[in-house]
Length: 124
Image 1 (cartoon, rainbow, N blue to C red):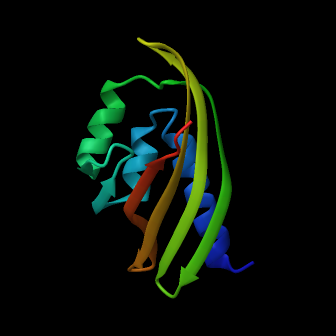
Image 2 (image 1 turned 120 degrees about the horizontal axis):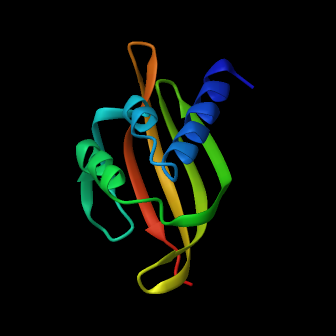
């Protein structure tokens, strides 16, 4: 396994742990300032919107699991795909959420950062 592959796997694991734990500092470090996302509802959001959303909403998951990790590296760009399954409780009661995601990382000045994300909710 190459050094880049090891680093990107670790960076993506850090993202996966930071998000449900509302770790704004880690997400701020991982996500590029020009990051753009299409979320599970089809909305376009940007880094500051994501960080604000996370800081004002508590973690909805009682449990979560990330799996189906796949990484492809193309020089200074990399694509990660995976799946999140989360269980929790909200105002409407207990829920299970499954979604697949694609994240694009780019190396700029020797540093890998996420620049784009696409989230698709898997119908139950």
